[in-house]
Image (cartoon, rainbow, N blue to C red; front, side, top):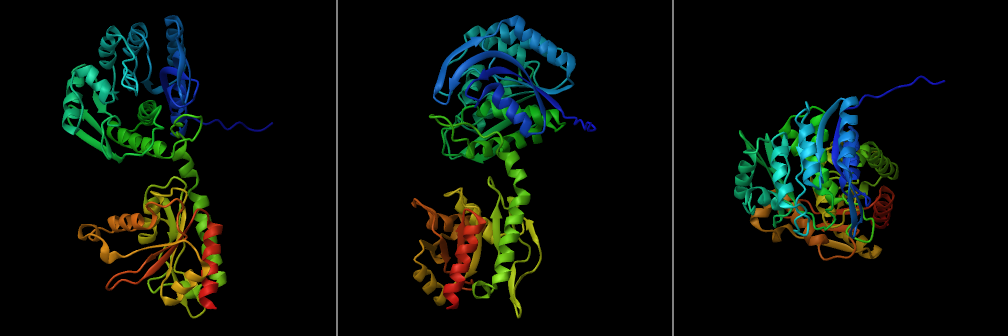
Length: 453
């Protein structure tokens, strides 16, 4: 018999409906809680028959059953935080509000009142019942439409979001997060309002309609983080980051718009060590092959991004770069995350156009390399830094974004190589990109052989 090794986890509770399609409701909540390392419990308020194309039917559970679930969970588990989702009727809202009076843990209320289509989901009496529930909550997370139902203020910008948040605070809720997903604009701005602060969390809008369940996921992420003991402001900030990644790397499932990827952040973290190992393997191959002919004066670097990378800190590279020596090429130091600046930013910018790209290497560029690229007949792109606007040239991140746009925009497939002809005082460089390390090695060795012949 093996010795048991039990694991203790914070506990969170979701009080919401069931989504048979898996993208929202308790399914989204429990997946989000698991992704945060929290044990999820549930009290189901309603059962829906739905998929990525829509809702076919729904059935609200009897009040006694909702009541019994809440009693069972709170009687046995040390709940660290709870969140509400679809409560469906006045009776359910009032039942949850009654229980919430005895909660000794934070409560996140997602006031599900308005569908994505803009249709009202509750009768006026049920909308009014939310005020009592909000009075027991730590934070409310209405979207712009729900905030308007609660306040009669049309949320169109940060100022009106703050005004709506201040009105909702009058219900007795400690904080209000006015979600900006329904407000048009290139950026999604979620505004946190309390008696002491107003803070906006901003993320670039993702060009996708696969946002079903995003509100559930955000509220569940906040609840999970509160259950782990995080303070409200960092819990909200971390939850909005979590959702932004989950929406960008959504699940392509079903015949509709797909589903939010609740596991993206967890899988991204799990991929860090394998990504670093893949980068090291590429470096070892370059050392063994002695690719001196490809090493630029500034040194070479190999960069690998995790599958869901959004920042330089999520890219692995050689610390100090790969340089030429009398005995061949050698890395200055080992591989670590965040070690590359220029090549990593270029790769991240390229991923904005082709997210499958995960690996890149910068190589020398001169007439011999240009001739080799022509002989290989690869698809090649290039950009000229002398053509970039002055305001872009002043910020390196912007330069990488601008350069990637010139190289990757309006293409059905990514180029194999991207030429940066440099500018006065800057070395010309060609960067090779690939979706996997094996392809990157094959391309670099083919270029090296062609240059060396």
